Length: 342
Ligand code: ADP
Ligand code: MG
Image 1: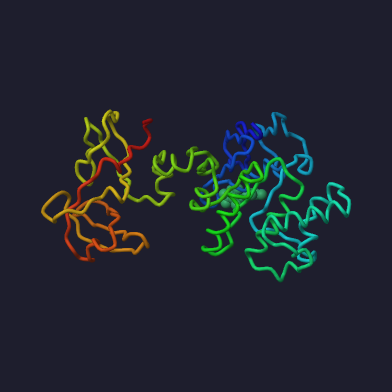
Image 2 (image 1 turned 30 degrees about the horizontal axis):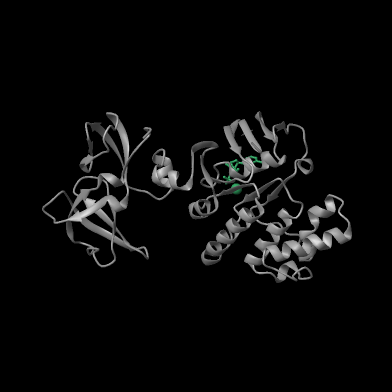
C-alpha cells in the first residue's frame, strides 16, 4: 500500500473529529472520501500531509511510519479547499512554487511549468496574473502547482467545490483522464456525491469522523450500508421493517424482499424506480403531493393515508398530476435490505 492509516485519531477539545480511521490507498488508485461538511475530511488530509498531528494511531507511506516527519519531507501534494494561489505571483510563479522549495534550477522550473500548463490546458499562461483568471482556470493552476513536484500521493480537498455545475462536470472528466494517463495516486475528499462517483475508483463514505462504508462507486450506489449513507446519497424511501419469509412488514404495507433475507428487524431502502404506480384501487393507496422535474424523469411525491411519504420515479409522460389518487406496488429488484451481507 502506498498510504495506510491505522486507527488514526484526532481530537479537538476532547471530541474525536477523526475516530479510529483505517484506510489504505494503493499505488495508482483514486480514492475519494465522501461526507457531509464537518465529518472530518479536511482533518484527514491534513493528518496525512503532516499538518495535523495524530492523537492516536499512525500514518504510513510506502510502509514507513510518518510520525515526526515534517510536511515537506513526506512527498505528498495537497491542493487546499480554497486553492490558496499566491495573488502577488503570476501563474508561472505559482506553479513553480514547490519546485523552488525543492531547489530546482531556473531552467528546470521553466521546463516543468511549461509542461504542466500544457497538461492542464493553459498553454502559455505563465505570465498571466492570478487575479485575471476565471474560477476554472485558477482551479487548473492550483492543480498544476500540486502536481509540479511529482508527489507520490496527490491529495485534493473539495477540488471542484467552488465551480459552477457545468464546468465541474467537464473538469471532473478531465481530471479522471489526467490521473489515469499520469498514473497518479490520488486521495480526494468532497461533500459532492456526483464528484466522488465520477472521480473515484473507490469511495469511502465518512460520518462524524468514522468510515460508514467503503466500496466502488457502483457498490455504494447499489447497496448503501445503512440509513445514513442511503439518505446522504439522496434516497428518502427508507423504512423500518420486520422480515418474515420473503415479506417485510412496513408502514407502507407488506413489501417483497429478496430470497434468503435474514428474518427480524431491518431497515429497507426502496429505490424510487421500484415504486410502481397502478390503478387507485390496487396496492397502497396514495395521493400525489408534489412533482419535481428531474430532466430524465419526474420525481413524484406520494402521500399514503397514514404512513410517511414515498418517492416514485416516473417517465415524463406517465407522471400523474398533483392531487391524483394512485395505487402503489413495489418491485423487489429495487428493494435493498440494509445492514445484512448479500
Ligand atoms: P470537513 O472537511 O469534513 O468539513 P473538518 O475536518 O474541516 O471537516 O472538520 C471536522 C470537525 O472538526 C468540524 O466540526 C470542525 O469544526 C472541527 N475542527 C476542524 N479543525 C479544528 C481545529 N483546528 N480546532 C477545533 N476544531 C476543529
Ligand atoms: Mg473540509
